[in-house]
Length: 193
Image (cartoon, rainbow, N blue to C red; front, top):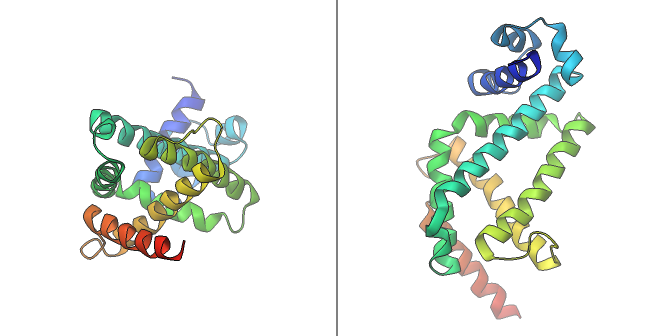
């Protein structure tokens, strides 16, 4: 493994152990066993490396969640698939807490860094279509307005529920409660149609 790969592995480890805001260039270099200057040489900056490490970690997390869904998501009604997905999300909040904290920290950094903002915005856009395709069978290749809207709602739920699970896991909603809330909102919206 070369310095580039060692730095990426070290950055992911530092995100998990120290978080986004508390990780320094020296932390990454020491963890990688690489010279400090190799961060700028390979990635341009510590922030660029951390951003990429965070986004890769989040995509890996999403891939793990999708892989665990397997046949259970293919079977059942859309409502059952959604409840199953939210149950997996809740479980992953327990096992991936450090990653969730790092993602919230990165969102705060986006206010001051156009580069971070753009990277996170691009990742959010990809996740919208992915969620709509996975949970509702909507076209993620040529997304329609409906695909984007459905994915955006799920993306907003992921962000909001992540914050609740990080701050107050005992009182954060269960997958069943999320479904109850969504059904009640849908009924109200149907009444206005």
